[in-house]
Image (cartoon, helix red, strand yellow):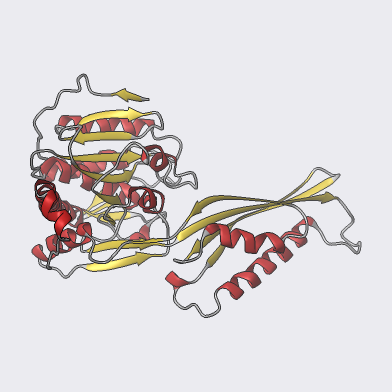
Length: 388
């Protein structure tokens, strides 16, 4: 079920966003708190801003904001999938010279604002449409927003809103698995022969790391090895029972399914309960896929050499790519090393440059998709080949 935010479904002319307006939009988004699970305020702001710029907007049942530009039945649908939520942590929003400081400025309201700007400016051929999605709960293992749109859309191409730097294009992400281990046992004197619940949690983790080392044999490089990190470790006691809980995150390389890692970890536990969530397989797009090609060409137009990246984190690309089976990359301004940090900030000049790059890429990508649809017989007779 979707809730219409606009007063009418009627299409209205696009109103391209100027550079000063683009900066104002980004600042307002960053100023509006939207920690995962509490995105309503920024959703309202985003829907209002997109409507002002000619997009027909709605809120779906998950809380996502969806903005359409172009006909609902367009044969060529390009989806720009960003996320509205942020991790916790209050950073005073301010502009110092060229830098905008604030939680979410890089991850990922900068890329999301870039999507809105480019969608308002892009030249769309007939029977083509751009859909900007501000998704909820990307920063949690649920990826609730992305999962809510998987079955609704069948795009011809997709861009995920994540920081790649204005001259970078991300073609791949590692997979993810989150594990929760809970151990409870009768309280005993510390001088006794048995270990504590915390001792058992630590021993279990050591066995897990040994298994990770085994899986990593013959693998090299951060992108191609399993990474394991303890996210949370707690102990408690009520005087009769002591408890230990351990939450760990694993980053998975291509070729290792989350279910495979889970099966390898389970035998490491001698007592307690294990729960697994956030099952996402790694995804790597072809380097020459259509979206990467058009973004690379637009970056060259801005005078720089494009850089194709793979990342050790995950994104909504991992969620939607296996279902949509279309050309897909991640793009957006910002230094991903600043994600989730107390010093998170974005260069405004880079943000404006990324907006120009994405606009030009959408122009040429939409044109190519429209041309392909106009010549279906040729496309069936002979696969198209596009030179750089």
